[in-house]
Length: 246
Ligand SMILES: O=P(O)(O)OC[C@H]1O[C@H](OP(=O)(O)OP(=O)(O)O)[C@H](O)[C@@H]1O
Image (cartoon, rainbow, N blue to C red; front, side):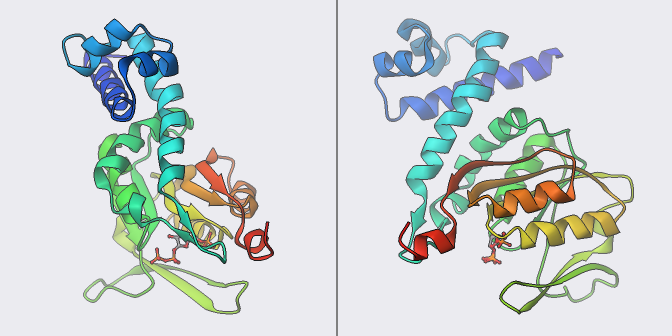
């Protein structure tokens, strides 16, 4: 790790600690982190930076747990089990904070492009692309005027509806590495279409990530399609279970 990477990790740890501190006293933060309250006070106030080992622990372990808890508190699930994710996907600063935790906590190789599907995955993809310093691309359900060449992926969904996603062909070059992300993975159909697009582009897959998995079907479907790491920060019961009163 070079000096700049070390400094970036230390600053990310401070961001995570500041987020945790918003809802805790220093004594409670000490209990959560196992670090002395005095040290935490100095980190949160910016007087001292945590060492590399502590910083990594905070970002990768505590950060992941804390973000999952924060995410769960923001999820609204209606009577039929449908997820309202607006409190998360509209909050770019929260997603910016989540990005390093996701990038460091899920074994993804650094991609060349972060790929998602419009609409709700875009802010997460932008946060991750910004963290990695790479491009962000999103496939849409309609063709953008003035773009000449598209990669298309089409699928007949379980519902019987046919869904097509279009990505400008220039968005991914052959041989590039693509991290496929979305806010939510339910059936996995959207992720599968995005993986089809990556395949057509002759790109490598760095991983598949969703903030929330509604059931395990989507995650398993993505795992069947790639050997790259596949994961979600948190999960809720699948829609059908909730409909039947689970
Ligand atoms: O795993 P799946 O069953 O494919 O479901 C997940 C997809 O559903 C939602 O998007 P939606 O199609 O509702 O479009 P939106 O983002 O424009 O709301 C969500 O943002 C994912 O892209």
